[in-house]
View (tube, rainbow, N blue to C red):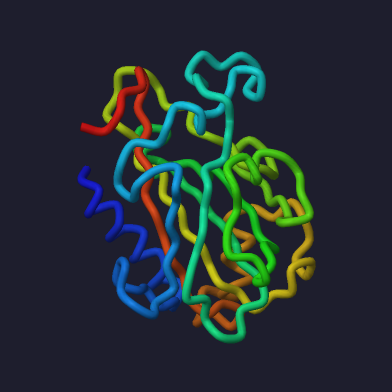
Length: 204
């Protein structure tokens, strides 16, 4: 599946929440970027999960270093951000909720490499598919097409410590848009797609 199609899917998720979906790199719109990888390109090997963090899973070939992220043009009224990272290719297309973090203060404009790899006062840890509340990098099965790790960054009206730790992806979405209706607790979303493949290779 093409990166454009994954970006369309990510946009569909945001539209499902009733959030504004800005055009990429348009002036004056809420935008998420990374110095670690370019949108739609291969992420470096270090961002993948490590065997030490995954009970020796041989598919985890990295160091579990979270990528650098920075954002601009934050909507007025934003109090905190949520980061939801999914792997729609996991489990033969059934998908996996890779990383669930929220309570990122609106007072900051970026996160350095590794900042999400361990507990910090800069975010509240949710619960991913394995129960982890920090960055959980790729463990892409070998000899498959690249997986498309989809980063959705949501500007919310929650105070940074308002939501309790340990929420799942679906529970965070329910807090943002109760009952699947229009979001009463979000302003907009921005996104990125990072690729990963095993054996690892740089983008062509």
